[in-house]
Length: 245
Image 1 (spheres, helix red, strand yellow):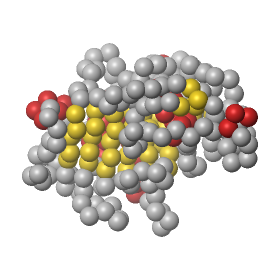
Image 2: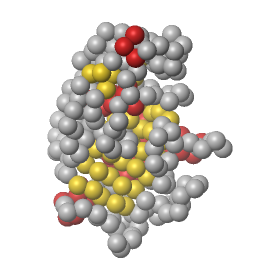
Image 3: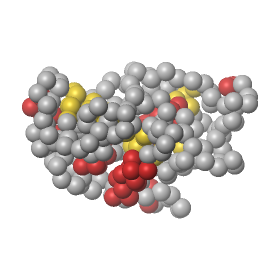
Image 4: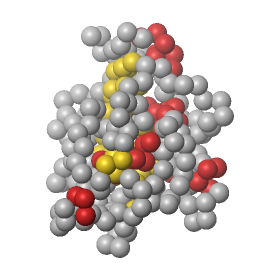
């Protein structure tokens, strides 16, 4: 495969021309989230080689975007039930009946929790941090979160978040940087803010349930945040609140 800089995208899919056009704006800042005129993302895989240094432990700077991923199941399972996902990070599937509050987390949000957020149209910004820390990764993801546009569906809720965005550590990732939406994934071995911001803008609000509801949302950072204690009780007996949408 020919390798190129960010300005010359390398497409690794059968839909090369269409996907290259889709990401043609990646060299610029991401546009505001605007679901009114957003076109459906096309299916396929795009591989980019931005001109950025690889993160520690990686050999090259590589960004892979997968879109149009088929989701074959989306059932509620009892809290604490483990689910195996077909993509890494997950892009949909069975999940718990509760979901995570929209915020930046210090604790790792269980995948079975944040997949429910994806079903609601959220974007999950995830990262795999080495023991030495990853301050620059966290800083870049924070910037993407802060610069994403506000969501009217969220702003109408009293005390609600500005947008359906979750930022969490995820030790099961294959790459140090990742993002997920319903039916789409982003993985990177380097920091490329333009392509990540573009992913957020393109795939925001694309879940089968377009809602910012907080009815069954939990906060895994807080002892009294409502998240189940899966290490102490049997799955069927785990807490987690009533089933949500």
